[in-house]
Image (cartoon, rainbow, N blue to C red; front, side):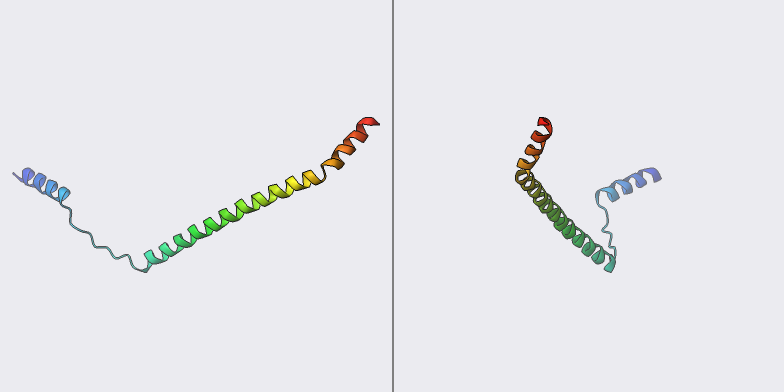
Length: 81
């Protein structure tokens, strides 16, 4: 008889759990603010890295195009002599 009542209580408590009221306090607010600033910082850091990479590639491309004729002429001079 005791086992049947325990099983019924278990089933009822599993299907209809009571609400748990927990106090979060100011720690949750501070944690949320830290997470928010971390996401914003990561976004701007990623944007900065992407822009820097594009600028670096364009500078390297322009440098190679501007000084390509000198490199070719130096190679031709070394090969001829």
